[in-house]
Length: 368
Image (tube, rainbow, N blue to C red):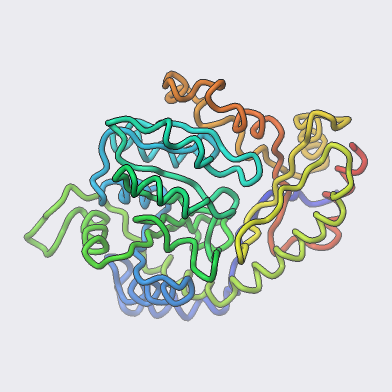
């Protein structure tokens, strides 16, 4: 029986290289509270990503929640319905109102043409997502934000290592939030980070992620416990040495898929964007003219023990806590609604063998 294939799997550094780091942590008895590995990992990430300041977190969702608090965002925030639910959940946790706008049909990112009409006197920020690692139109979004005095926080969960115009995509907006979840291109088992551009904001973020403590008797903010442990930070240090090879292998798989699926009727492979890409996902669109529906193809994959994913379906705006919002109406989000009904993400991760890739392609060929 063939082994199951998943959309993503964690890329893990060799265990024999991780054991000495664990022993170092064990001997030091410093396992959390921003210890030496935490500090080393922040510096190493700045160097690798080409940014000035990084604040580590236990996960990306806590990073999003804290980013909104750090900038004291209030009222309404314009965001996308085409993302993982954590994007919008972070707004509700801060008692903010999401205002959904439609997406671009090519990049699947927030459509800048839809932003201005969604701005009201209560709007204070824009929360776009670099979907599948595709860079948003950061220049246009920033111009709109500057014209209306709005903050910009990027959900960059998929965008590790992506650049545009010779500059890290993370170095745009007021803040960018990364996820280091096990299924991401770069992972620390669980983890995340906020990329920020000035020391005062970094200091506020560091206070907020550690209960608001300045010292043992001084609390300056109603913070949470968002700190990354020393074990996760040490693993991240080790993983940095392998991420380039992981991205290279993902690039090869991406190329194999594109070559095999390019001329299949009814199957569309969205183009890549950005100067450098990390190949974090491989979405295809099963168009209406395809001889099989998206859900029928999804079922065929499941029957073959290939766990392709309808990612992102349903839209965030379709879930109960959001669908009552005026901006959640499908008439307001026609492109996002269509893409969510057509999208299917195929397996892509470094351990995927050539035979595994052939299995995936064969299912599509047999169906189409």
